[in-house]
Image 1: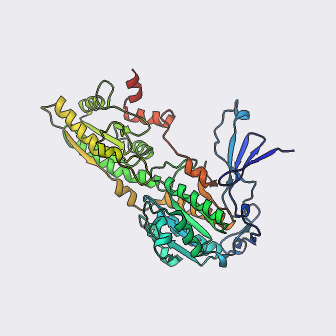
Image 2: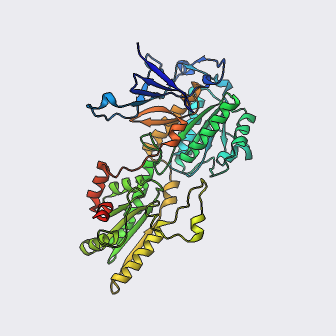
Image 3: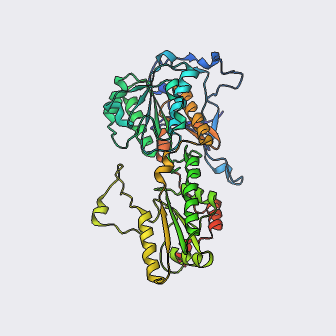
Length: 465
């Protein structure tokens, strides 16, 4: 007999299997509602699909969070598993009874419009849903504006446009008003697109919907141009962002090469994580130094940034520096009024590392090389990167995320996010995805590879020495 232990969770059941396999159960409407109906999946009769044996996903189809294991310790390690995403043979909504809402929140990233488009196209053509609404201006749109009708002809070319056609905003999260709006409009499927702050809000929306006993599926599609959402392989739009950043790095390199003692300084997104800076550096090969939040650095003294820059300029005549926006925050002097500033989530406000680093470098050069010319060009491509449409790879990714979310919501799952884990699409409880962060591991091979490409010093090691 197999031994199962079921534990309660904010967002669904957690099943311990054999004490070593931990299944993160996807919350379902049946967990708090009685008499939830079931219907045969409309895909069985859809002209575009051929549901042969194995087409539909079952509860036994699971995705492992970690597929790299140590064979000597695997018997003692707990394996975390999630339910695989995909169509189920039975659904809990009749298509003519679905009233879907789509909302985009938080910062922009490439691919948001693609996700919106594919949610509309998937609901319309796969499941026959005809009542699909867009919520304008983020969470506040549930109570401050009228929903807009979405249909295939309207959204047909949205994937070719950057930003979000539904508009977005930060803040405006009034839980009671949001759920009141969901209830008043009769929405029973809500698709929420946004980053970690948005997903934290989605957890609260799900919990309030559950408390009120509403038959509403809450589905999240996490995105972050910084790629800081944990558990999933990558956030949609990240690859487009890394590709677009190459233009800024190339411009900085050209400017640096074209002047005596030329320095090109590029600031990229990444408040808490340096994934864009790291991957853009690896993709360029023109970068001499990459600074990220996870790897502290210092400016002056032996082994510091300016010493490395000085040696590189002496040897090569030019220098390209990429810095993530969250790097060096502890080094930037804060005025009394700066110490009190908070962002929309209550965290200490970030100071602009780009201009600060530019000014510090100029001052240091003037002090140590008073008779030599320094040509420094500072480039901040943040809004250019955020505003572009998704590339082909991200468009495909966005389509599969949207389809996964639709299949889950139609099957009656709720309080989940659709994401790709180790190449396979899965349903992750919202509270798990909202709490998990994806930091750059400066002890792994990728960071070492980056340092071998740039030849930059290990600032932490230099500091200890």
